[in-house]
Image (cartoon, rainbow over all chains, first blue to last red; front, side, top):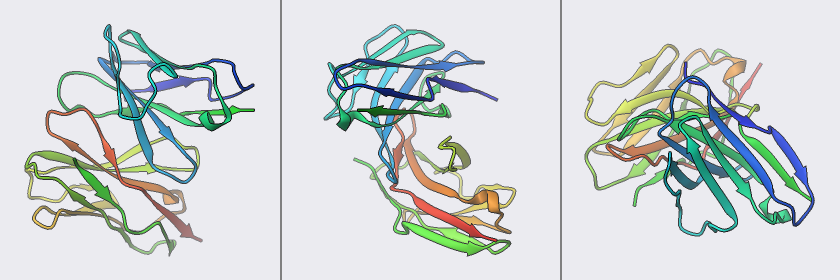
Length: 116
Length: 114
């Protein structure tokens, strides 16, 4: 089956530093990747959609300069949280799919970010 | 805009019993897909079952089945012979045909009691 990995699984950083989270599709080429944020006991909120080789599309209310997304290849997308602050602490999940229109999204295991 | 509502924040049931999780959605479109995802304590999202709106027959996957009522915009999940491993958050989700974005409900925390 299609497998999506995320690295790191958890990260703790100091306020003001930047953190990069990687999302990889291991056995398929992902034309589209999605980044979600999930607060404790809440649902997944879509942050942005990224297509390989083009700029990410951010959801309303998501700061583009704060959450930098790069989808440089068909198997890798990165989310960089710049100048992280405690309120950025959350669980970040990526998903990936291939093809045009609807195709099943395969989810990564998530990354827990804690900003001190 | 599409919305998905799960009115049961938490549920619990004895092992081996049957439980039904509710989901309603709102859309003016006719072609779409509906899903139930499971998120166990590991936080890994797992697709449980999928329903295409154009199909009248309810989807079934082993112990999991849905009751899809298109006119009522209702999409409930029935888990038969519940097992301890079914303990998880369950999210109902919606996607328009030809679209990419999933819209999730708020989730139902299901606990299976030994």
